[in-house]
Amino acid sequence: MAETHLPTTKETRDLLSGLLGRDVTLVPCPPLAPRPGAPRTVATYVDDHFGLRAIIACDLEFSARAGAALALIPAPAAEAAIETKGLGDNLTENLYEVLNVAASLFNVPGAVHVRLLELHAAGTAIPPQVESRILTLGRREDLEVNITGYGPGRLSVVIIS
Image (cartoon, rainbow, N blue to C red; front, side, top):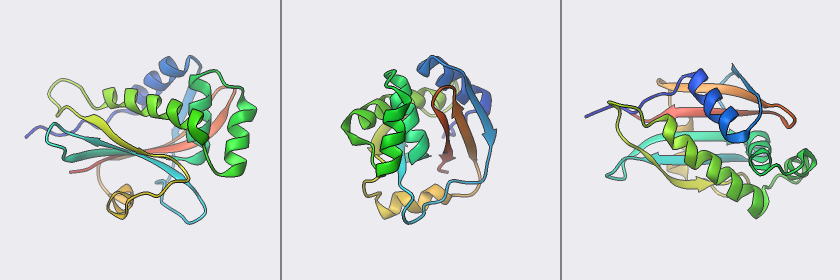
């Protein structure tokens, strides 16, 4: 069976820059671990048989800033969401679009095809069986992402073997 492709930092940067229409810088950082009081967004990606193949976990800062940047919502709206520790419907819908398009990062020739199954937005409950997979060791990429005009946040791309 084909493996799930782990996107390179450059592939992730190119996708985010193109999608958000602004410069994005990425640097490696420690894994994004679940923590009480630190809301996380978690997107789950499955294969054609609904087998979990990948997770993208984002901190609240990336979630709010990417959601705002996609729709050209002013940066103060993202900062307000960060302060209140919740995205609201508008930023959640925009972030869903960002992470839905991010499925294309995994879908390269020779790799298993995956699609976004669920988005657990920052501030909502994450199923325990998904939350435990965020810390999977092995094939993963942990990045600090700085979106020009919006600011930094973190995301982790985790391949589930």
